[in-house]
Image (tube, rainbow, N blue to C red; front, side):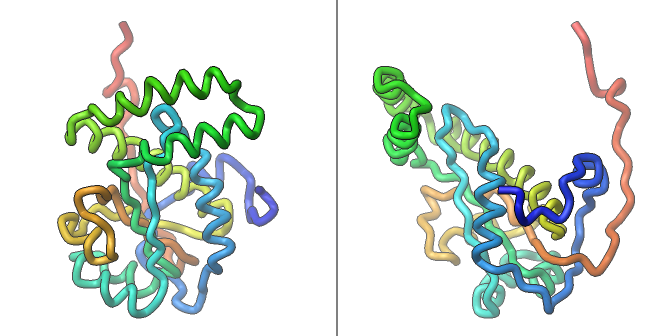
Length: 212
């Protein structure tokens, strides 16, 4: 899985990450490499392994033109990036629960009785969550995958920018998804940087942490 890594240095990947808004327009990421990065990113954890993240990779001129009016002040990323990755949370993610748990059983990672017990408890539980509860679950889980994707991208030699400024009520339908099922979480621009990004600061953990 790490064959395509440009760097595997944790400190460089983690601490030198910046939000990049301008990219080399001549650099395109192949579908194969994009799927490799997504595979690496989706090793992120999720509640009861329901993996509710869903991705739409907007890379064509037509796709970017469709996205452009929906991203407010983030048009530079759209215009120059290799792709804009739309990250959604699937409110019906539990419909793939049986497939996920069967895969774990067939791979020898879960006994049959554990699979059956887990599915018997998890699926009804998810089906009975309120819309708000489900919204919270899928957004938290998809955000974990999004952060991991940003770090994975750096390992492959690319940079990203997490974008929250977009027309959330229109995004799913604009890309032929059911807006009641697929909740927009964020958009990531990705590509080869042509800028270094801004330096930034963080609050001291002592100021925002309480020990009991």
